[in-house]
Length: 109
Length: 446
Image (tube, rainbow over all chains, first blue to last red; front, side, top):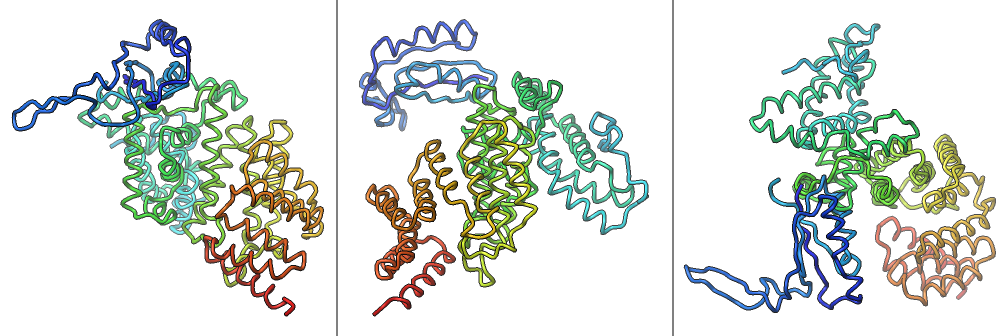
């Protein structure tokens, strides 16, 4: 099954060094295992743009679609046997120790 | 439709094996046999169909069908020697039949392949069961799936009851005092999440087995308490309590190395043994020291003690085993004065080390009071009160009140009883506290 991992912080930044947050070893390991398909970091919410179309007009606004304290800082797409494996993979991501990882199953296989 | 018996492993020598003496059985006996099988075998039947098809709704429907068919067939053919195997085979064949006919056959079978046996964790369980050749019991895989931490706790509780016991959605709803529609939605959402999120149908891998087992035991303990909370229990809740004991027995039996499972079973048995003495004819709460001990179920106590001793012998202690040991101290004492309070105080100290918390400390204070006298107990209770963690918990002032009463200080005791009364959550507890309040007020020197 495919899962989207949302790599999130609670908005206050992390109490960790850049080395502790370095996801490269995790990326390498999970790619080698054949679990991680793709992923990337995303820029902060202040660089986000939200697009809506209403009555045929494109409305473009600055910022994320929902104002929350929690911020998404990146994503990964993984392919796993089941949720237990997805949880195991997510739990090894360095950000899991300081922020949180949301695991979302894809709608279709 | 297939004919129920496929000559597969489960049916061999059992499915067709009608009771020879019966040659068609009396209706009353058949009804009784079906009712017993409903209670004892529902979980096995549902688990087997899920294991084979990965489809929870189909499993429930086909289990239901199998029992209906038993009601038709058993009066004519006799009750099979192994009703569980007959029902399982019948339900499984019915399910495979329906899947074969379904238009979306390929999707379902692919799902089945993913969720079916042969997952790596199988080996772990075989080892867990202490037998390299044993296939894990489907019911154990089912209970771990129902109690998966990715499901909300109320859903874990509901799903465990619906899938593993013969309780209907309506009965579960009544036991937890929610509308049936709410309970049905809760079950549907949980089953959807299992499917959509890929929650696997299996016993967890060894690295996470202890914590996942703890989650299963927590759900079972919650079920037990549903019908055990003082004054809260009606017939629906008591049935849930009985099912909790049955499931704990199953889990403890299937995972002999997880000593806390046996610890929980022992704890349940030892508490349940006192059920008849806990309330009087009017439904009022009877405290332990005033209970008629001849009403205690001696065979349950003996079984609880035996289960506990078996667990303790493996030297993997845990909070349930310690609590069961406390319950055993009470259960084996001929009377309140013969109770080994020193031992109980030590056990609570041990429990506080394993699972620290103010409620454990309060229990320890009670044991110390019984062992060393109420003054010493009161010191501990007052220290706890000043920490503030138990503010709003009725048993804190109720315990203070009891100690003050024992110390012959009716004035402060009455005040503490009033405080407890304002906080007590159930009618039975309020009546008990009112009675005590009346006693200390009457005996109070003016």
